[in-house]
Image 1 (tube, rainbow, N blue to C red):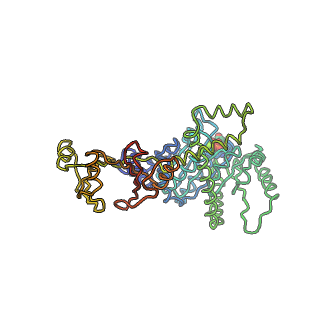
Image 2 (cartoon, protein in one colour):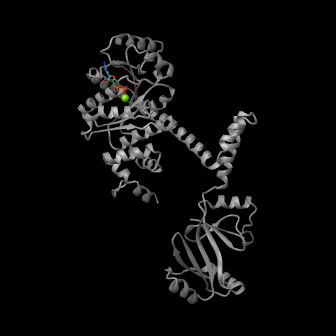
Image 3 (spheres, rainbow, N blue to C red):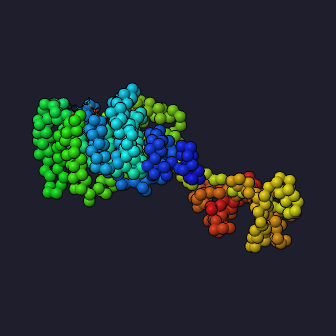
Length: 464
Ligand SMILES: Nc1nc2c(ncn2[C@@H]2O[C@H](COP(=O)(O)OP(=O)(O)O)[C@@H](O)[C@H]2O)c(=O)[nH]1
Ligand SMILES: [Mg+2]
């Protein structure tokens, strides 16, 4: 099943998309990131498939206010990393122009010079959707580039508020870009951006006041005490337009990488925790909205809160309780029809109809000695017909035919968790022949429901 899903997400080629991403195929990478951006289920499937192959790339986050020169700097960093023979992927996120796409186009044009370089892949992320989704999409796009074998993944984000900190968290090293005379450092301090900086860059160092900006960052850092051995964020001056200071920045990145090599695992683990928590919350809210609340119910609840008829805690308690009960009500997914068992008086007559007239294929019979019965399976797609032939007069099938004549003897439903299914039936007052499952054919577990509870039909539950 998963095989066919993965096959269908390939872009026409016979090879699955995940395989082509792992081979570094640029078109596959582009397609994969689009699926992730669209929150398509295939995007999640792809992440599952490539995840085991990731963790090799070093993720470099570049954040700062719009116009700080991040894109120009990223462009220079690409050049510098390429000179050092490292392959580079870029994810640029710019929420400042969600409608025009102007900034996205700008980034593309600016980075055009690398387009012909197979060692570079640049992608601008669309910024529709909520920020949580954007953070997830950014992280997953970086993952795809990692899977595609890029040594370095640069993530450009606009750092304007606490929310963007989530995106910044995606990186192994966070570079905060400030410009002279802008008061950026004060803004960044307020937004909590300063705390996540591993390296400060004062870009546009050609401008007046660069040293003053450096001094004010220094002053801020001096308020904090750095224990021996703890990384103290250095301040690097750059001129992204000319490339001045960029080699020093790359060296500083490498120094940070070496310094934190032992704790990189911890940092990535913390990131995984954040990601999983975020995804769990997202999934749960989706589940509540799609499966628990009726259409318009959410709005009505909000109205009732506004009218002080209820309060947020009671609403959440109620929704939470319903969501859990709802889950228990479907403990193991839906049951599906496995087969219908037909008690046969005269096998040759039955075969004349099912095999010869209907043209169905009948499998070689199987003898169930304990029941004194011979079973002839007839596959019909996802389910089957089972012709049951008695092999002795005291067989239950012989008795059934003698009493009721040939006909439907039982139907069998496949359930993923037979114990959960039985518990639920019992709770609902259904009369069971077997309260606990017994061993069936081929290592399966089976249990029978009494016909009196199933409108005259003997129902068998089966867990493969
Ligand atoms: N004077 C000067 N201008 C720069 C420097 N770096 C970038 N710029 C200019 O600043 C503007 C914004 O740059 P951009 O990279 O788009 O900034 P972003 O919004 O942070 O990505 C552009 O006009 C750049 O040419 C620099 O070091 N010095
Ligand atoms: Mg930019």
